[in-house]
Image 1: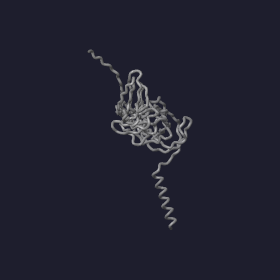
Image 2: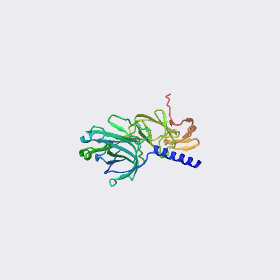
Image 3: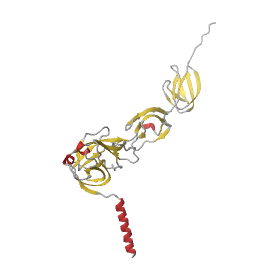
Image 4: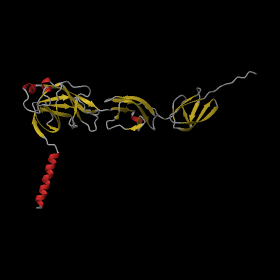
Length: 323
C-alpha cells in the first residue's frame, strides 16, 4: 500500500514537471537563413519564406547590446492574409544553425503572428532588466538565451488553405543590434600610477572586468584621486554604445624645488651638496639650505609641502655710497 502511494506521488511530480518545463521539439524547415548582426547599423536584407528559419548571429562584443531587432518587409500577398503566418522564437537549438542544415531540435519560448501590414519588427531581448519597450510597430518577445552567439526564429503556417501565392511569397529580413542605454569610460594611466580612485559626478565608481566604467551618455565630470599623484578633474563626453578613452599623465605630488645662485656658489640641502639650477627630489617637511660663496655663508630654513613648487634664490648685491 505504501509503495503504491509512493509511486503515485512520484508519478504526479513527474507529470507536474512535464507540465511546467518546456519540452524540446524536433522539426524540419525548408531553408536556414543566416544573418550576421553588425554592431552598428543594419545588416543586408536576406530572403526568407514560410517554413524557413532565421538565425541571427551576434557580434563577439556584447558589452552595449541588449537585444536584436529583425526588420521584416512583408509582401502584399501575405499582408492580405493577416494572421496566417506564425513566427516562433527558440532556445537550445541543436545543431548550431548552418545554411546546410534543415533538421533541428529546440525549445519554443515565444510565438507571434505577422500582422496585415507591409512592415513589422521583431525585437528579441538578450539581457534581463533590458529597457526595450513594446510598440505598435514592433513585437517585443521574451528574452532569448544568446550564450551561444545567436538567436533563432522559425516561420510556419498558422492555418491551412492559403493560396499558392502566399506559400511562395518571401519576406525581406534584416537585423541590427539594440544598444543599451550606456556608454563606457576607459581610463589609461602610467604603469607606476599605483592605486587611485575614480569619481564621476561626485560618485565613486569602479571598472568592470573589462576595465570599463559603464555610464549614462552625456557630459561627465571625472576626478582622479591618488595619494601618490596630484588630483585631476576632467570633463568628458560619454556616447551611447561607445567607449571613451581617457589618458592620464599624472603629476607627482612630490614638491618641486629649484635653487638659483650666482656662479661658483656651493649649495647644500640638509648637509648634502646639490647642483644649483637642477630640480631637487625632497620629501615634504622642513629642510636646511646652506650657501657658500667667497667665504660668505647663508643659511635658510624652508618648510615645503606636497603638490607645491619652490624656487630658492640667493643674490649677492653691492652697495656704493658716495662721500
